[in-house]
Length: 378
Image (cartoon, rainbow, N blue to C red):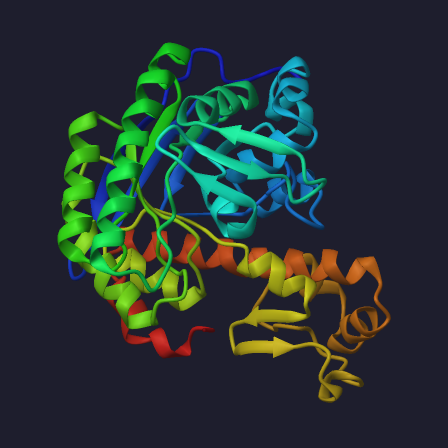
């Protein structure tokens, strides 16, 4: 498959703001296509969205997926992927890719890693082998993968975290961000985007300082990291509301690792443009399905003889063809098809939700989504 990205460069513009909420309708331009925002990015950790052939993702309208540097670095290796022409060709995915730096995955294996000023020493969760990831190496790996948008290496601050520790962690992330940007400018001519990651735990002043420093460095966009890591939901929203205004209007705003359909709507109202989360795909494999009438646990006995569709308001191939009774049977029998059909539905629900949100912003009716927030699955 030929690379379609030649000559195209990264860019972003805000096309419209909802009159009552300030929610933003925008357009991301990448070497592998334009992406309307707000956008939800399905998570394809190891170069694939679990249980989803790429042609299914294309049919669902996914314009961009997330892949993970940590996992692809360990297996099959970024050098192999580079020799195969980059991740787009290797995975036969013609649309855009954002690569996470791997920082969150490294830091989630606390017992296997040691942080220093230079970078992070860690052991592979696969075979125990030792590795050393520096900000420069994170950029080199992502360059080999050929992502359209790359993320800096940061330290994901845990929760709870006292202010002195949160500040020290944020300062380390800022120094790493500068090193990432310097190395990336040696590897890329500006065709692809590079995002800084705002840290600072739940402390608004630290978040402000982090955002201002990253803005001054000149990143293509800014992500808000270190949320949805165990803090109370309202603390997450308070921190988000205090942080988003410090990101300039002309730059895309990416909330990492969040969240439920309600989370998406509330965050869009706060000016967020980009999201990713494993929730729709992971929940699908576990038999938890998002519908217009709330969550459905397909294993429940009440579905055993239900001939109706999973969601009568959904037009996905799962809901058009299969009954709740059959979906329950597949799940209870441990059939692989269960994960496929459930994932098709959950991703359809998320991507359709984002399409409807964009339509509402364009028509200045997004406020109605906020008023109907409690009707959305949590």
